[in-house]
Length: 365
Ligand code: IPM
Ligand code: MN
Image 1 (spheres, rainbow, N blue to C red):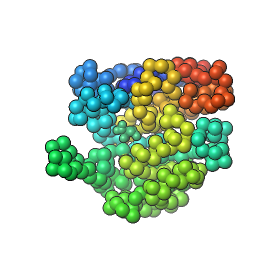
Image 2 (spheres, rainbow, N blue to C red):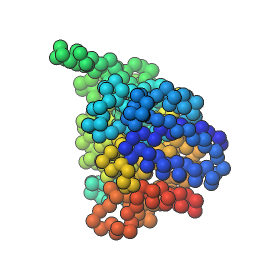
Image 3 (cartoon, rainbow, N blue to C red):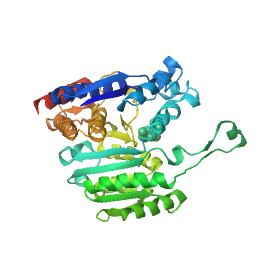
Image 4 (cartoon, helix red, strand yellow):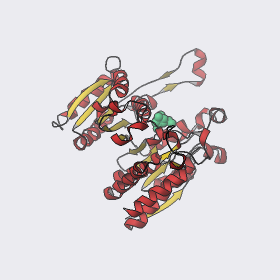
């Protein structure tokens, strides 16, 4: 297979974890005889400081002509972000525009913790039980993040607002993605909402019920988002299967899921539209540990695996990457944030050490 990939390294730990993602990608290329052409482009806060735009036109062109996009985390420490005018901040001027440019509405965030790694979680091993395997599906281009906003000069009138809007098509298409995935994940779909308060949630739920008729074999349950936040900590195993979330609720609960796993470094993600998609870790750019070679590249390498699986339909290759990722932990190695007092120093891997080991396991497999 021949594919062109736009690579947006991003800020903070972005470049160093991207390096590991690309290292593993080229191991896949060699082992399976594919050809992935990489084109790098600036994106995020660093792009703003070097070009005056956090999503420069040149980067848009690189992304437009690519088959898929690999993106690192973006953003810097608060003081530095404040040097960027609001309109050019990466969230507003780069990340959300990237999502809407490719209508990347379906955000896949797998929350996976095998029983043997229950110690990674701050929860008790009996709470992790036989392991977690939840696919969180978050609607990514609608809702309150994309609705009309009143801010800036209006705040002098002492009000501001963000409006939450969903139309029928937006709910229908994400619900179909979630039900389809549920048929492959335990036949269980948990629909998250806030229908006791929000009109958009009541609307959302009625469409989810409608789509359920197309997938009668899927067990559908519904839960209020506040209760879902509670249950995720109390008894996460009950959600093994697929969880469907609107944009903001999904943003919050996917971070909570990272906490349940024990590290946001274990949260890869893929965001897919009708014609193009991109992948990125679900976490931020961790400026406090940038450049120290200690960041966990799992989420970036896992995001690359999601690109192989979901965007290039290379299931065997993706599986081999997942197995290698798990293999590193099975051999007792840990990235620094996953260690405990009993982890021997010799088992602690640097960012590059982790990537090298994934490559080694992949080549051996
Ligand atoms: C995420 C991030 C983004 C979001 C931010 C950086 C805009 O938190 O991908 O979860 O809110 O979606
Ligand atoms: Mn988030």
